Length: 314
Image (cartoon, rainbow, N blue to C red; front, side, top):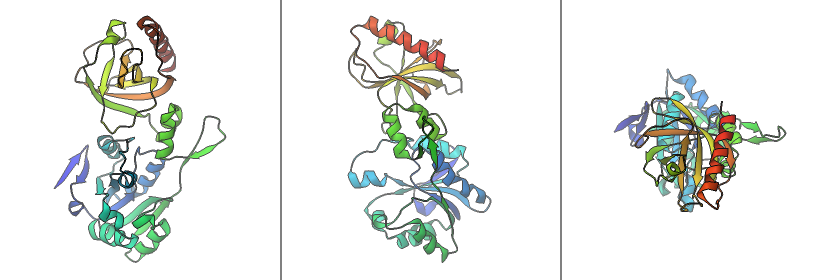
């Protein structure tokens, strides 16, 4: 069975993949600017081969450690971004003991050649594959030559930090580090788009409404990676593509009850949002969450947060 999501074909089994393929290999969590450089070459062959991303699920690190890994882009978000980049097929290889045990040559012969009829491969220069990561880019190129397969290696992308002095390699792990300390400008610079949270508005305790700042309580995918707890200025996109300025709080609401929530207050807007899907784009970290001595003190701070957000958001 093959099914499509957002225009991308996703075979339920590799046996049902559309072939021949031009393949980009990797995990592509976040689909940041470095990932896009790896994806770009396979699009040149779209008239001859199916532009295909081959990824691994769960992430190999999750498989080996047994620890659940939160994602920059859960599957629906990943597929939607891939579709916007004109990728036509996503192969999600089940990363299990059988796959982990394949030697590099077995991976090439069994998966790439046997199942996907690969004619062109694009990878980052730090790509490893096969049992115990013994397969290097050089080995991939040497092995695939005998099958007439071309391999394109992409140099790692870098970006300048805010001090303009230290070029750093763009990576999903680096993006995670910056999200963890609220460095949203750097996160967005590496991604090439604003990091976003997308979810359905559900009923909350409605405490914000009682102090003059009603909020939309978002239910997010359980495996979506959240930024550090605190307050952010954001843009909020509705399903009809309308965009409203807002202030978002991620955290445990220490002044009230200590439960983890993601709540958004929309500036200069009112209406019923229950059941609506919102996409919240993070633009700037304003402050860490704080326990206030009273609801009035919390209200005063929210007023300041909103004022600052208005001055930042265009």
